[in-house]
Image (cartoon, rainbow, N blue to C red; front, side, top):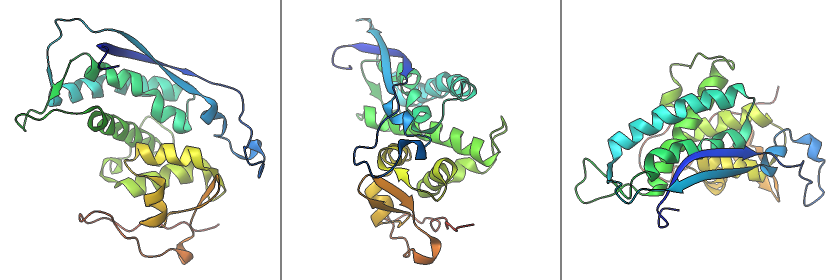
Length: 229
């Protein structure tokens, strides 16, 4: 899209039919968000003007936050949930980035903000929005501490909110992990939050969990404890 001088200015969320479990190991009705995996996000683009100027990362990020803040509230009020919600904001977010042929780093001379770098910021904002709604009981009030949660904790809250301690489709977990800047492998190997069997994933229980092994050097809080009720 970028090489073709396309500028993204919207995204349409199209819901498909209920998916059948490919391995026939469970009933699709067991997963309330399995339907979300049948959805597709269509990006609405137009040609970027040849006169478009380079952008600066700080201004582009500010514009992105303003663009998707309103859209997130609209999507939430429309009842969009699960991985659909995280990815539906892609179009509105990319509008701020794709209107420029290149986005430069204001504090790092000669460096540019790549698409993956930009999307990481956008997805984190969406995740923080959802986590805030989860912690505040699905109201318009945002929990004051939600923007200080680390990535594994944010993932845990999203997973626990949607699937509880039951089995969950691996595809939805992968999408949530990516949105949190993680991978499902890291959540299994390094954090011992998940256990995966084929296409089925579930949270590990606190009594069987190993001590988390962070793949980075920065300090992190312990992984949340899942306890059966």
